[in-house]
Amino acid sequence: MRVLLIGSGGREHALAWKIAASPLLTKLYAAPGNPGIGREAELVTLDIADHAAVARFCTEKKIDLVVVGPEGPLVAGIANDLRAENIRVFGPSRAAARLEGSKGFTKDLCANYAIPTAAYGRFGDLASARAYVEKTGAPIVIKADGLAAGKGVTVAMNLAEALAALDACFDGSFGQAGAEVVVEEFLTGEEASFFCLCDGVTALPFGTAQDHKRLSDGDVGPNTGGMGAYSPAPVMTPEMIDRTMREIVEPTMRGMAELGAPFSGVLFAGLMISGEGPKLIEYNTRFGDPECQVLMMRLKDDLLVLLNAAADGQLAHTSVRWRNEAALTVVMAAKGYPGTPEKGSVIRGVEQAAGDGVEIFHAGTAIDSGALVANGGRVLGVTATGGTVGEAQRRAYAALDRIDWPQGFCRRDIGWQAVSREQAR
Image (cartoon, rainbow, N blue to C red):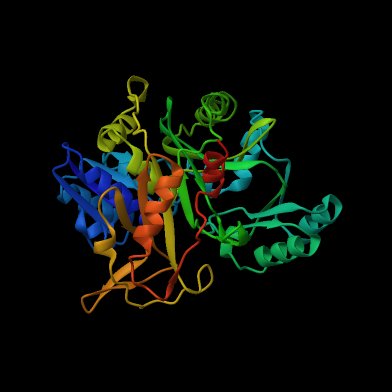
Protein backbone atom coordinates (compact mmCIF):
# COMPACT_ATOMS: atom_id res chain seq x y z
CA MET A 1 0.00 0.00 0.00
CA ARG A 2 0.97 3.61 -0.66
CA VAL A 3 -0.07 5.86 2.24
CA LEU A 4 -0.12 9.62 2.77
CA LEU A 5 -0.05 10.83 6.38
CA ILE A 6 -1.24 14.39 7.02
CA GLY A 7 0.28 16.28 9.97
CA SER A 8 3.52 17.30 11.65
CA GLY A 9 3.25 16.65 15.41
CA GLY A 10 4.08 14.00 17.94
CA ARG A 11 0.84 12.18 17.21
CA GLU A 12 1.78 11.92 13.54
CA HIS A 13 5.31 10.72 14.34
CA ALA A 14 3.81 7.92 16.44
CA LEU A 15 1.39 7.03 13.62
CA ALA A 16 4.21 7.08 11.06
CA TRP A 17 6.36 4.86 13.29
CA LYS A 18 3.57 2.30 13.61
CA ILE A 19 2.41 2.44 9.98
CA ALA A 20 6.02 2.02 8.81
CA ALA A 21 6.17 -1.31 10.66
CA SER A 22 3.30 -2.77 8.60
CA PRO A 23 4.12 -5.53 6.09
CA LEU A 24 1.32 -4.05 3.95
CA LEU A 25 3.22 -0.80 3.41
CA THR A 26 4.99 -0.12 0.13
CA LYS A 27 5.56 3.62 0.52
CA LEU A 28 4.75 6.17 3.22
CA TYR A 29 4.60 9.89 2.47
CA ALA A 30 4.00 12.60 5.08
CA ALA A 31 2.93 16.22 4.65
CA PRO A 32 4.40 18.35 6.03
CA GLY A 33 5.99 16.03 8.61
CA ASN A 34 8.96 16.78 10.88
CA PRO A 35 12.53 15.47 11.23
CA GLY A 36 11.39 12.48 13.30
CA ILE A 37 8.67 11.56 10.80
CA GLY A 38 11.30 11.91 8.09
CA ARG A 39 13.01 8.80 9.47
CA GLU A 40 9.88 6.77 8.71
CA ALA A 41 8.43 8.48 5.63
CA GLU A 42 9.28 10.62 2.62
CA LEU A 43 8.39 14.20 3.53
CA VAL A 44 6.52 16.16 0.87
CA THR A 45 5.91 19.89 0.59
CA LEU A 46 2.15 20.17 0.37
CA ASP A 47 -0.19 22.89 1.56
CA ILE A 48 -2.58 20.66 3.49
CA ALA A 49 -5.16 23.47 3.48
CA ASP A 50 -5.22 23.20 -0.35
CA HIS A 51 -7.36 20.10 -0.67
CA ALA A 52 -7.20 20.13 -4.48
CA ALA A 53 -3.39 20.03 -4.33
CA VAL A 54 -3.51 17.13 -1.86
CA ALA A 55 -5.91 15.28 -4.18
CA ARG A 56 -3.64 15.84 -7.17
CA PHE A 57 -0.67 14.48 -5.24
CA CYS A 58 -2.68 11.40 -4.25
CA THR A 59 -3.66 10.76 -7.85
CA GLU A 60 -0.11 11.26 -9.17
CA LYS A 61 1.42 8.99 -6.53
CA LYS A 62 -1.38 6.41 -6.63
CA ILE A 63 -2.08 6.78 -2.90
CA ASP A 64 -4.21 3.94 -1.50
CA LEU A 65 -5.09 5.58 1.83
CA VAL A 66 -4.82 9.05 3.35
CA VAL A 67 -4.50 9.14 7.15
CA VAL A 68 -5.41 12.55 8.58
CA GLY A 69 -3.73 13.26 11.92
CA PRO A 70 -4.81 16.72 13.15
CA GLU A 71 -8.30 18.10 13.69
CA GLY A 72 -7.98 21.28 11.61
CA PRO A 73 -8.07 19.65 8.15
CA LEU A 74 -10.90 17.33 9.25
CA VAL A 75 -13.09 20.21 10.42
CA ALA A 76 -12.23 21.99 7.15
CA GLY A 77 -13.59 19.01 5.18
CA ILE A 78 -10.46 17.41 3.71
CA ALA A 79 -12.06 13.95 3.95
CA ASN A 80 -15.07 15.11 1.89
CA ASP A 81 -12.90 16.67 -0.80
CA LEU A 82 -10.62 13.64 -1.13
CA ARG A 83 -13.50 11.16 -1.18
CA ALA A 84 -15.11 13.24 -3.93
CA GLU A 85 -12.02 12.33 -5.99
CA ASN A 86 -12.40 8.62 -5.09
CA ILE A 87 -9.45 8.73 -2.68
CA ARG A 88 -9.78 6.53 0.41
CA VAL A 89 -9.46 8.41 3.71
CA PHE A 90 -9.22 7.48 7.36
CA GLY A 91 -11.00 10.33 9.11
CA PRO A 92 -14.49 11.81 9.54
CA SER A 93 -16.41 14.03 7.17
CA ARG A 94 -16.78 17.76 7.80
CA ALA A 95 -20.25 17.19 9.25
CA ALA A 96 -19.08 14.38 11.54
CA ALA A 97 -16.02 16.39 12.66
CA ARG A 98 -18.42 18.93 14.21
CA LEU A 99 -18.18 16.69 17.28
CA GLU A 100 -14.82 18.39 17.83
CA GLY A 101 -15.27 21.53 15.79
CA SER A 102 -18.21 22.79 17.85
CA LYS A 103 -18.50 22.05 21.56
CA GLY A 104 -22.03 23.45 21.47
CA PHE A 105 -23.02 20.96 18.75
CA THR A 106 -21.76 18.09 20.89
CA LYS A 107 -23.54 19.35 24.01
CA ASP A 108 -26.81 19.58 22.10
CA LEU A 109 -26.31 16.05 20.76
CA CYS A 110 -25.79 14.85 24.34
CA ALA A 111 -29.01 16.57 25.41
CA ASN A 112 -30.99 15.06 22.54
CA TYR A 113 -29.71 11.52 23.06
CA ALA A 114 -29.55 11.41 26.88
CA ILE A 115 -25.76 11.10 26.90
CA PRO A 116 -24.42 11.85 30.42
CA THR A 117 -22.49 15.13 30.47
CA ALA A 118 -22.20 18.33 32.50
CA ALA A 119 -25.10 20.78 32.59
CA TYR A 120 -24.40 23.68 30.21
CA GLY A 121 -25.43 26.86 28.48
CA ARG A 122 -24.51 28.18 24.99
CA PHE A 123 -23.94 31.88 24.42
CA GLY A 124 -23.12 34.10 21.46
CA ASP A 125 -22.69 37.34 23.38
CA LEU A 126 -20.79 38.46 26.45
CA ALA A 127 -23.70 39.95 28.38
CA SER A 128 -25.85 36.81 28.47
CA ALA A 129 -22.81 34.60 29.22
CA ARG A 130 -21.80 36.86 32.12
CA ALA A 131 -25.35 36.84 33.50
CA TYR A 132 -25.41 33.01 33.41
CA VAL A 133 -22.02 32.73 35.11
CA GLU A 134 -22.91 35.27 37.82
CA LYS A 135 -26.14 33.43 38.51
CA THR A 136 -24.52 29.95 38.54
CA GLY A 137 -21.35 30.84 40.44
CA ALA A 138 -17.98 29.10 40.57
CA PRO A 139 -16.29 26.70 40.17
CA ILE A 140 -17.42 26.62 36.55
CA VAL A 141 -15.92 25.75 33.15
CA ILE A 142 -15.67 28.20 30.23
CA LYS A 143 -15.04 26.78 26.74
CA ALA A 144 -14.51 28.49 23.41
CA ASP A 145 -16.92 26.72 21.06
CA GLY A 146 -14.47 26.09 18.22
CA LEU A 147 -10.95 24.76 17.74
CA ALA A 148 -8.41 26.49 19.98
CA ALA A 149 -5.42 24.08 19.95
CA GLY A 150 -6.35 22.67 23.35
CA LYS A 151 -6.11 26.09 25.00
CA GLY A 152 -9.70 27.38 24.82
CA VAL A 153 -10.86 25.79 28.08
CA THR A 154 -10.72 27.50 31.47
CA VAL A 155 -11.59 25.65 34.66
CA ALA A 156 -12.48 28.72 36.74
CA MET A 157 -12.31 28.18 40.49
CA ASN A 158 -13.71 31.64 41.25
CA LEU A 159 -15.98 34.19 39.62
CA ALA A 160 -13.18 36.55 38.62
CA GLU A 161 -11.42 33.78 36.66
CA ALA A 162 -14.66 32.84 34.93
CA LEU A 163 -15.45 36.40 33.88
CA ALA A 164 -11.88 36.92 32.66
CA ALA A 165 -12.17 33.75 30.55
CA LEU A 166 -15.39 35.04 29.01
CA ASP A 167 -13.73 38.36 28.24
CA ALA A 168 -10.82 36.52 26.56
CA CYS A 169 -13.21 34.56 24.33
CA PHE A 170 -15.29 37.52 23.23
CA ASP A 171 -12.26 39.82 22.92
CA GLY A 172 -10.89 37.55 20.22
CA SER A 173 -8.09 35.72 22.08
CA PHE A 174 -9.12 32.51 20.30
CA GLY A 175 -10.22 34.12 17.03
CA GLN A 176 -13.42 32.82 15.52
CA ALA A 177 -13.29 29.81 17.88
CA GLY A 178 -14.37 32.08 20.74
CA ALA A 179 -17.23 33.81 18.93
CA GLU A 180 -19.55 31.46 20.83
CA VAL A 181 -18.92 29.95 24.25
CA VAL A 182 -20.15 26.95 26.18
CA VAL A 183 -20.40 27.36 29.95
CA GLU A 184 -20.45 24.08 31.85
CA GLU A 185 -21.04 22.71 35.28
CA PHE A 186 -17.79 21.84 37.09
CA LEU A 187 -17.45 18.05 37.33
CA THR A 188 -15.43 16.21 39.96
CA GLY A 189 -13.81 12.81 39.60
CA GLU A 190 -10.91 11.36 37.64
CA GLU A 191 -10.37 12.20 33.98
CA ALA A 192 -9.68 9.52 31.39
CA SER A 193 -9.28 9.31 27.62
CA PHE A 194 -11.19 6.59 25.76
CA PHE A 195 -10.72 5.84 22.07
CA CYS A 196 -12.77 4.00 19.46
CA LEU A 197 -12.11 3.23 15.82
CA CYS A 198 -15.32 3.84 13.89
CA ASP A 199 -16.56 3.03 10.40
CA GLY A 200 -19.90 4.84 10.36
CA VAL A 201 -21.79 1.92 11.91
CA THR A 202 -19.47 0.04 14.26
CA ALA A 203 -17.41 1.56 17.09
CA LEU A 204 -14.49 -0.67 18.13
CA PRO A 205 -12.96 0.12 21.55
CA PHE A 206 -9.35 1.17 20.98
CA GLY A 207 -7.58 1.71 24.24
CA THR A 208 -7.55 4.00 27.24
CA ALA A 209 -5.14 6.60 28.54
CA GLN A 210 -4.86 9.42 31.05
CA ASP A 211 -3.59 12.80 29.91
CA HIS A 212 -1.99 15.54 32.01
CA LYS A 213 -3.32 18.85 30.71
CA ARG A 214 -2.01 21.27 33.33
CA LEU A 215 1.41 22.81 32.78
CA SER A 216 3.09 22.03 36.10
CA ASP A 217 3.62 19.28 38.67
CA GLY A 218 0.66 18.64 40.93
CA ASP A 219 -1.79 19.44 38.12
CA VAL A 220 -1.51 23.20 38.54
CA GLY A 221 -1.01 26.02 36.06
CA PRO A 222 -2.71 26.75 32.74
CA ASN A 223 -4.19 24.12 30.45
CA THR A 224 -1.91 22.96 27.64
CA GLY A 225 -2.24 20.62 24.68
CA GLY A 226 -0.98 17.90 27.04
CA MET A 227 2.25 17.53 29.05
CA GLY A 228 2.25 13.73 29.19
CA ALA A 229 0.09 10.62 29.23
CA TYR A 230 0.08 6.97 30.16
CA SER A 231 -1.86 3.89 29.11
CA PRO A 232 -3.85 1.97 30.15
CA ALA A 233 -5.87 4.16 32.53
CA PRO A 234 -6.64 2.07 35.65
CA VAL A 235 -9.91 3.94 36.25
CA MET A 236 -11.22 2.51 32.94
CA THR A 237 -12.12 -0.93 34.23
CA PRO A 238 -13.90 -3.41 31.92
CA GLU A 239 -17.17 -2.40 33.58
CA MET A 240 -16.47 1.30 32.99
CA ILE A 241 -15.56 0.65 29.36
CA ASP A 242 -18.82 -1.25 28.90
CA ARG A 243 -20.81 1.60 30.44
CA THR A 244 -19.00 4.16 28.30
CA MET A 245 -19.85 2.22 25.16
CA ARG A 246 -23.53 1.78 26.08
CA GLU A 247 -24.20 5.20 27.59
CA ILE A 248 -21.96 7.49 25.54
CA VAL A 249 -20.37 6.05 22.38
CA GLU A 250 -23.24 3.98 20.97
CA PRO A 251 -25.87 6.77 21.35
CA THR A 252 -23.40 9.14 19.68
CA MET A 253 -22.90 6.80 16.72
CA ARG A 254 -26.67 6.38 16.42
CA GLY A 255 -27.28 10.12 16.71
CA MET A 256 -24.69 11.05 14.10
CA ALA A 257 -26.13 8.50 11.66
CA GLU A 258 -29.63 9.89 12.21
CA LEU A 259 -28.30 13.39 11.51
CA GLY A 260 -26.95 12.16 8.17
CA ALA A 261 -23.34 12.41 9.35
CA PRO A 262 -22.23 8.85 10.21
CA PHE A 263 -18.95 8.94 12.09
CA SER A 264 -15.88 7.26 10.60
CA GLY A 265 -12.35 7.62 11.98
CA VAL A 266 -11.17 7.99 15.58
CA LEU A 267 -13.70 8.97 18.21
CA PHE A 268 -11.85 10.21 21.30
CA ALA A 269 -14.04 10.66 24.36
CA GLY A 270 -12.64 12.80 27.15
CA LEU A 271 -14.37 11.45 30.26
CA MET A 272 -14.87 12.32 33.89
CA ILE A 273 -15.25 9.20 36.01
CA SER A 274 -17.03 9.48 39.36
CA GLY A 275 -19.18 7.33 41.62
CA GLU A 276 -22.05 8.05 39.22
CA GLY A 277 -20.15 6.52 36.31
CA PRO A 278 -18.72 8.09 33.15
CA LYS A 279 -19.67 11.57 31.93
CA LEU A 280 -18.56 13.07 28.64
CA ILE A 281 -16.35 16.16 28.95
CA GLU A 282 -15.75 16.56 25.22
CA TYR A 283 -15.19 14.68 21.99
CA ASN A 284 -12.18 14.85 19.71
CA THR A 285 -12.33 13.38 16.23
CA ARG A 286 -8.69 12.24 15.97
CA PHE A 287 -6.09 10.54 18.13
CA GLY A 288 -5.00 12.54 21.16
CA ASP A 289 -1.54 14.00 21.48
CA PRO A 290 0.30 12.71 23.55
CA GLU A 291 -2.15 9.81 24.06
CA CYS A 292 -1.46 8.48 20.56
CA GLN A 293 2.17 7.92 21.46
CA VAL A 294 1.39 5.58 24.36
CA LEU A 295 -1.33 3.76 22.40
CA MET A 296 0.99 3.06 19.46
CA MET A 297 3.67 1.70 21.81
CA ARG A 298 1.15 -0.76 23.30
CA LEU A 299 -0.69 -1.78 20.12
CA LYS A 300 0.12 -5.36 19.21
CA ASP A 301 -1.74 -5.47 15.90
CA ASP A 302 -0.89 -3.98 12.51
CA LEU A 303 -2.26 -0.42 12.57
CA LEU A 304 -2.61 -0.27 8.81
CA VAL A 305 -4.93 -3.30 8.83
CA LEU A 306 -7.14 -1.55 11.39
CA LEU A 307 -7.19 1.76 9.50
CA ASN A 308 -8.17 -0.08 6.31
CA ALA A 309 -11.00 -1.87 8.12
CA ALA A 310 -12.33 1.46 9.39
CA ALA A 311 -12.10 3.07 5.95
CA ASP A 312 -13.89 0.10 4.34
CA GLY A 313 -16.69 -0.33 6.91
CA GLN A 314 -15.33 -3.68 8.12
CA LEU A 315 -14.79 -3.08 11.84
CA ALA A 316 -17.61 -5.44 12.81
CA HIS A 317 -15.25 -8.25 11.77
CA THR A 318 -12.15 -6.81 13.49
CA SER A 319 -10.59 -7.04 16.94
CA VAL A 320 -7.68 -5.27 18.64
CA ARG A 321 -4.90 -6.81 20.74
CA TRP A 322 -2.71 -4.95 23.21
CA ARG A 323 0.63 -5.70 24.80
CA ASN A 324 0.48 -6.30 28.54
CA GLU A 325 2.97 -3.51 29.26
CA ALA A 326 2.08 -0.02 30.33
CA ALA A 327 3.40 2.94 28.32
CA LEU A 328 4.13 6.49 29.47
CA THR A 329 5.02 9.67 27.56
CA VAL A 330 6.66 12.78 29.03
CA VAL A 331 6.44 15.90 26.88
CA MET A 332 9.49 18.14 26.66
CA ALA A 333 8.36 21.68 25.88
CA ALA A 334 10.19 24.88 24.98
CA LYS A 335 10.43 27.65 27.54
CA GLY A 336 7.55 30.06 27.09
CA TYR A 337 4.98 27.34 26.34
CA PRO A 338 1.93 27.46 26.41
CA GLY A 339 2.40 31.17 25.62
CA THR A 340 5.06 32.12 23.07
CA PRO A 341 7.68 29.35 23.00
CA GLU A 342 11.34 30.11 22.41
CA LYS A 343 12.39 28.63 19.06
CA GLY A 344 15.78 27.78 17.61
CA SER A 345 17.57 26.26 20.60
CA VAL A 346 19.73 23.22 19.81
CA ILE A 347 18.71 19.79 21.14
CA ARG A 348 21.38 17.11 21.59
CA GLY A 349 21.36 13.47 22.66
CA VAL A 350 17.98 12.42 21.23
CA GLU A 351 19.34 9.45 19.29
CA GLN A 352 21.31 8.22 22.32
CA ALA A 353 18.24 8.44 24.58
CA ALA A 354 16.13 6.08 22.45
CA GLY A 355 16.25 2.29 22.39
CA ASP A 356 15.25 -0.73 24.50
CA GLY A 357 11.54 0.06 24.79
CA VAL A 358 12.08 3.83 24.59
CA GLU A 359 11.03 5.93 21.60
CA ILE A 360 11.50 9.69 21.22
CA PHE A 361 8.65 11.10 19.16
CA HIS A 362 9.27 14.47 17.53
CA ALA A 363 6.62 17.19 17.65
CA GLY A 364 7.93 20.76 17.31
CA THR A 365 11.39 20.11 15.84
CA ALA A 366 13.30 21.28 12.78
CA ILE A 367 16.78 20.93 11.28
CA ASP A 368 18.88 24.11 11.15
CA SER A 369 22.43 23.95 9.74
CA GLY A 370 22.49 20.22 10.41
CA ALA A 371 21.41 20.54 14.05
CA LEU A 372 18.11 19.48 15.62
CA VAL A 373 16.37 22.58 17.00
CA ALA A 374 13.17 23.44 18.82
CA ASN A 375 10.50 24.74 16.45
CA GLY A 376 7.32 24.78 18.52
CA GLY A 377 5.81 24.60 21.99
CA ARG A 378 5.66 20.89 22.64
CA VAL A 379 8.88 19.62 21.12
CA LEU A 380 9.55 15.97 22.05
CA GLY A 381 7.55 13.08 23.52
CA VAL A 382 9.82 10.74 25.46
CA THR A 383 7.92 7.45 25.58
CA ALA A 384 8.74 4.22 27.40
CA THR A 385 7.10 0.90 28.17
CA GLY A 386 7.32 -1.12 31.37
CA GLY A 387 5.69 -3.90 33.32
CA THR A 388 3.91 -1.25 35.40
CA VAL A 389 3.22 2.46 34.98
CA GLY A 390 5.87 3.07 37.63
CA GLU A 391 8.49 1.15 35.65
CA ALA A 392 7.53 2.95 32.42
CA GLN A 393 7.76 6.26 34.30
CA ARG A 394 11.26 5.51 35.58
CA ARG A 395 12.49 4.48 32.15
CA ALA A 396 10.96 7.53 30.44
CA TYR A 397 12.56 9.97 32.87
CA ALA A 398 15.90 8.16 32.70
CA ALA A 399 15.83 8.55 28.90
CA LEU A 400 14.70 12.17 29.14
CA ASP A 401 17.60 12.99 31.44
CA ARG A 402 20.01 11.83 28.72
CA ILE A 403 18.72 14.57 26.37
CA ASP A 404 20.82 17.75 26.44
CA TRP A 405 18.44 20.67 25.99
CA PRO A 406 18.78 23.41 28.64
CA GLN A 407 16.00 25.47 27.04
CA GLY A 408 13.44 22.68 27.47
CA PHE A 409 11.30 21.77 30.43
CA CYS A 410 8.88 19.03 31.48
CA ARG A 411 6.67 17.88 34.31
CA ARG A 412 8.33 15.38 36.64
CA ASP A 413 5.14 13.67 37.87
CA ILE A 414 3.52 12.17 34.76
CA GLY A 415 1.56 9.07 35.77
CA TRP A 416 1.35 10.02 39.45
CA GLN A 417 -2.19 8.74 39.97
CA ALA A 418 -1.44 5.29 38.56
CA VAL A 419 1.89 5.08 40.38
CA SER A 420 0.16 5.97 43.67
CA ARG A 421 -2.32 3.15 43.07
CA GLU A 422 0.50 0.70 42.39
CA GLN A 423 2.38 1.70 45.52
CA ALA A 424 -0.78 1.34 47.65
CA ARG A 425 -1.27 -2.30 46.68
